[in-house]
Length: 301
Image 1: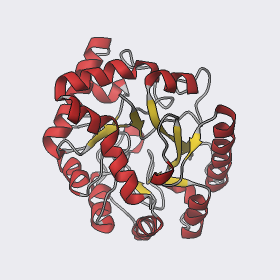
Image 2: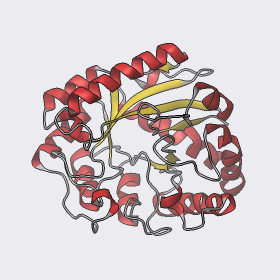
Image 3: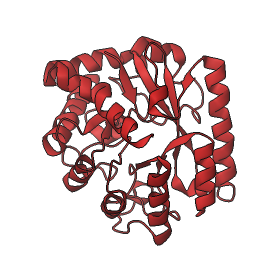
């Protein structure tokens, strides 16, 4: 069973990468989203420049590895590993719609609006996970940026965003948006996970939530069996709250430590088999690729 992964950090990963062409091939990846992650702590005064350099790195990687880079859904091909460029940390546009448009021209088709710190667009769910749930949402500029993203055909991603930000994006978008790599707070109460209200808003928009493989977001049980159980529990809860059309995959590979159960994409077939056993073949197919593909087809005109 082939799958679509809405988020990985291989562009900025170091050492031995989890996401490689061989690992994706063995895992059965149909499309991998590669995030140009801009760490504001390292690049506080050159966020946009850093983002552009990572866009260039993405192009070089696709040529070197033989990935099929896509900018619209009609370019997605069967029988190859498709690759889509995204940005993680909306502060990369430095409060400029012009820079947002420039990133779109560079091939960026999804942007995670915030990371772990407030930026010109809006507020995170908890600053570096140490602060209480942040009830600030989109700024005035953030609303303009999201409106422009909708016009361009760029997916708005609310992973890392505050509860208020998710509500604000739902009002502005009036169409599909996503949480590319997030789990369910009701299953495990980490501030990075989504509340039931936010899950419903994303589902009602026609969007999807990409199941995140970070062990710290899943459970206190860090054994392989405990992590498998937790992943299935988060999947079940998101489907219960948002419906079977709301769940997708958002591994966060290369942005997270190795999960004891899902170490890298090579282990995806086993997990997808578990999804099939638990939810049946039709629903598993939706989770693996059909739900994400529907959003891509609707937004990436």
